[in-house]
Structure formats: structure tokens, C-alpha cells
Length: 254
Image (cartoon, rainbow, N blue to C red; front, side, top):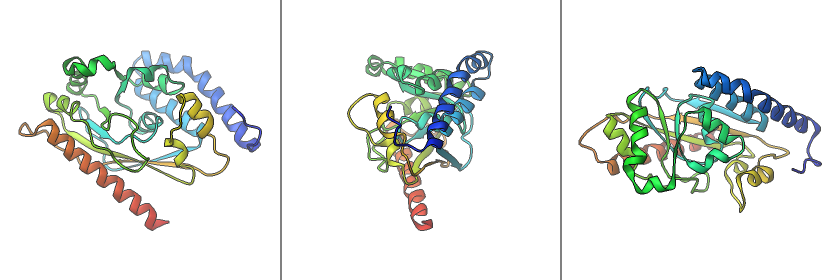
């Protein structure tokens, strides 16, 4: 990572932050094993976000326990941002487990890793989600199925995992991630290469800041008359409206 042109204060902050993250690994793993998973996830995320200079704000009511929370997906920082506010269980593709920093946060965050092969068999993918919902866990779903858009547009939600909420009799909470600040594009803009290369190229801007709002909408109550496709469409509309309203508000305030 080439840091020669960066301000000494920022270089020192990154160095101290990365050292703190490494030193926190053993105690946070122990805390997580002893039942303090939410604490470990929350404060690991706070240190990581502080290292990168990412500020997080939240709005709306806390999702009830045992709810499926449907988010848009903007950046690979999304799980860490969410976990630093309200820890819960995440759904993730299996390869995330090997990603730097994010992989550790995923492991202590009781992530449900989904193998690509499991996507061909909806039952094997849905069973652990239904189990977590019925046991009172908040399950966070990036319903677009990946980081697909331009950081603003909310792509259509995939209906498959909404079936889990129907089987568990769980509410679905629409939730939006809105990245702002002068350096926000650095958080989501992807180029060719690995996650580590993306971090090296884009996530250490000399100037500017990244501010993220985590906005929770009103729960969509369980209704056995709904299909998973209808439920996904309702959640998509609500999340799109959250993003639109928050971005328009930020423009007007600016």
C-alpha cells in the first residue's frame, strides 16, 4: 500500500487502528465464544470504521427480534456498518469468510454462510434462516443478491429468502444504507481485482469523509396471504423510498 503522499496524521491513525484490530482479535474471539457475540461484533466494527474514518448514524425504530431485515447492498463495509449499530445474524456467500477484516466480523457475527450449490436447493439454504428467526434472532438480508448497483439505485430484490420469513411467521423490516460525504464513492466503486486490491486502491482517500446512514422502515407484518414474490416487491419499494427520501433530504440540507 503506497502511503507516501498521505498526511502523517492519517498514516498514524491507520497504523494505530490496524494494530488495535490485530490486538483485539484474540480477546474478541474469547468474548464471542463466551456468549458476548453482539459486544464483540459491535466494538470490532466501531474500531474498524474509525480506522477508515467512516461515520455511522442510524434512524428509525430498532427492528424487533425475530425479524428478517431486508437491506440494499452498497459496499463490502455494509455488514460492519450494520453490526456496529445493531448486531444480528447475516446471510453471506461462503467466500466472504476469507476476506480481510470482513471475514472476521462475519465469523463473530453468527453469519449464515450460503454455498453457491445451496442456492440450487432452496430448502438447504432456508433451513438455518428459519431456525434463527424462530429463535428470536434478527437476520439481515442483502436482498439484491450482491453489490450490483451504482451506490444509489436499489436493484430488484430476490424473492427466495423471503420464503424464510413466511415459514417462520416473521415480520420483514425494510432497511436502507445511504452513503454520503465527499469520499463516499470510494466505499462502493468497484474495479477489477480482489477485495484487498479494492481496499488498497480506494479506501484511503487523503481528503474527504464517508458518512453512512442506517435507516429502518416500518415492519411488514406476517401475512399468510402474501407470496414471497409479493413480499420481496413490497420490501423493495419501501427500501427504495427510504433511499430516495434520505438522499433528497441530504441534498436539500446541503
